[in-house]
Length: 172
Ligand SMILES: CC(C)(COP(=O)(O)OP(=O)(O)OC[C@H]1O[C@@H](n2cnc3c(N)ncnc32)[C@H](O)[C@@H]1OP(=O)(O)O)[C@@H](O)C(=O)NCCC(=O)NCCS
Image 1 (cartoon, rainbow, N blue to C red):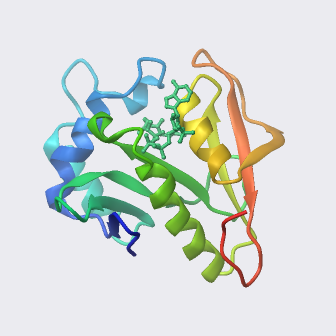
Image 2 (image 1 turned 90 degrees about the horizontal axis):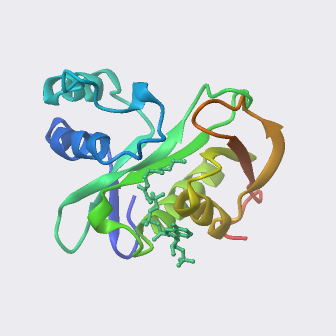
């Protein structure tokens, strides 16, 4: 998949350093199991193994077309709490690439793919404190679903949803 500035492609083992960098940059309010532990795990080998296991995953590596560099991932995940068989949108980009509209641009391409794949809705869970992500979801037309995910020490997790128009583009 491509957008004017980005290429979205299958994950490759060569993405491991970028993916590990994303782990190191995560906000301290992100749950511990999603952060590097005291032993430095996951390390590059762990991440490579994860990429191998995720063969066929709908989480795609996001690459800048102008530099050819990988800058993060965007895509769909399945099996999340409260969303049944419908997919959930996920995205994460290197900090150096933030606030240039890349996440929104990548996610629009993913939503267009979801329309073509015949999904009626895509969900997205977001921490209440994650204002950048909430803004991206707002720009994409996601609204609060009214369904709650359990709150935790990490704050309130808001479950948002985007209805996809049948036979059309995802843009509202
Ligand atoms: C969320 C994330 C992917 C956004 O990527 P991005 O490429 O910077 O997103 P965009 O540039 O498309 O849009 C960011 C928007 O958030 C806004 N924003 C950024 N920081 C903000 C803040 N602290 N408060 C309010 N708005 C903020 C930007 O101004 C921009 O909105 P605008 O276009 O109206 O100006 C990126 O911040 C990230 O990787 N965060 C860590 C991982 C993460 O939180 N993933 C999502 C989990 S639900």
